Picture 1 (tube, rainbow, N blue to C red):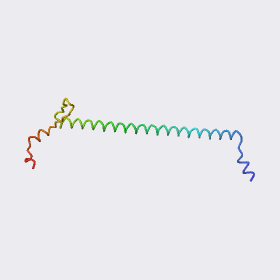
Picture 2: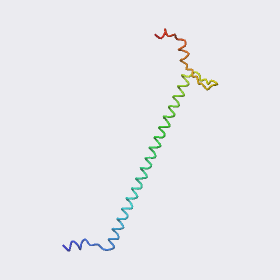
Picture 3: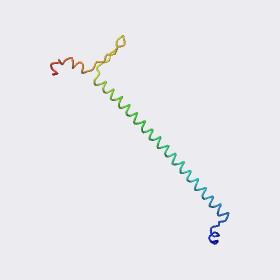
Picture 4: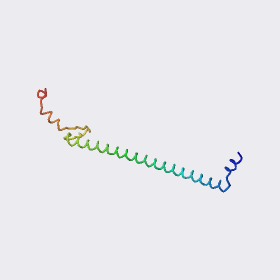
Length: 104
């Protein structure tokens, strides 16, 4: 029984060496945690950038669709002196040419 205890007793030098290895292992783990946190932060920033680019693309697409709509369907926009806005669509002219009887 005492022999087992004697075999487990370590010298002060061995203890210092184990303590140094333990401290080194802790520092490495903390370094890895810090590195993982930085990676996570970078990934979050990249995701945010992708979402912003996606939103900008959608806004641009809507703008382009609106421009295309205006170019194809709106003939003219007039603002009267009393600030009344009148929009004339290309198909308004067509509707004037077609009589109600022609539609039915």
